[in-house]
Length: 156
Image (cartoon, rainbow, N blue to C red; front, side):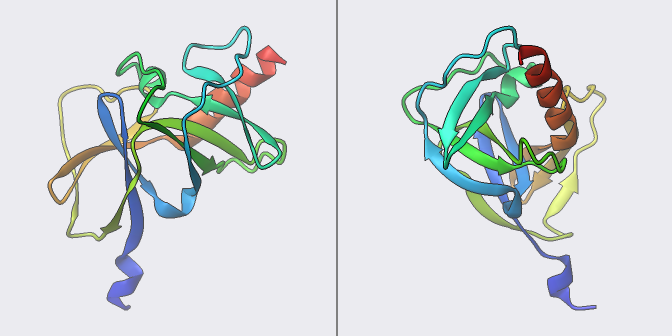
């Protein structure tokens, strides 16, 4: 098998109090932050909805979802549009608040190490990892999407 089979293009995404590592293929676009339209009766991690290419996308704060920090958008904040992995045709995308632009990285087996810790993983986190010298968490996007679907169903 070729060495190229073990290489994944990834992105490091800075959020309040954490850095996320995601496959580059999950990102559809990076946008400048604009205040979202509020949605009533949803958890505080669902910041509202934004308009993108004819879609009304829910905007989430991963830091709030994982209870890492009380993140709010502002000057310098960005929004990444993510392709939903759950196959929901009504919600094929959602948006996440970030602090600045995602950074492209090449992820190889030798550059990525799982960080063992006695600390319990926050909600929505699959693993703590180190990529070269960068500490990051791998978010559980399936869990986040399921919680998002539930929150939107209650708000509908």
